[in-house]
Amino acid sequence: MKTPREILLHQHRIAETRLNQIRREAVRVAADVNRRSAPVRKLTFAATVVRPLVVLWRELVLPARWAWGGIATVWVVIGILSLSQSDRTTVVAKVSPRSAQELRAASEQRRELLLELALLPTTELALPPKPNLQPRSERNCEFLNA
Image 1: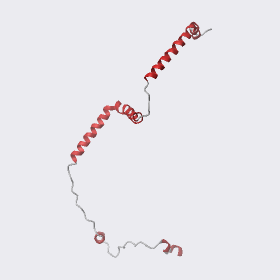
Image 2: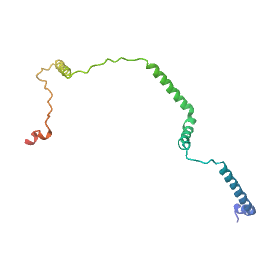
Image 3: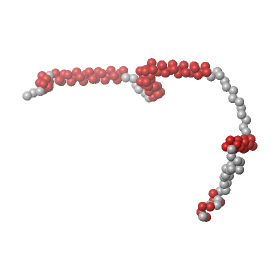
Image 4: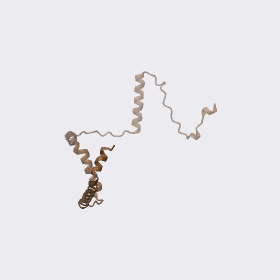
């Protein structure tokens, strides 16, 4: 039994050659029109830099222009408020650097005050150990001698 497709193709087999000829003519005419109307594309500044920026503008900004406009408005308001608040100037007193003697005396005074607050006798306060300033190769290793 023949399929419906076979029946239709058998009935229109005569028209198939004519349809192929019409199809070729239509494709040839369309190709000629496209060749004449297509601009010669050269690698220019506009094609390499500006074109991607235009595409980016169309894809990101234009669909959400109300949102971007709202964000821009908020930033303008923040900028205006920031500029209106910057009129107040603050004067900072210049502090002269202290000398080493003043720092040492202040440290001693602070230590004495802490001792008075803790009610400890001054003899119980041990001074911090002085660092060993000898090179490591000349240090005496006491733990090895034991």
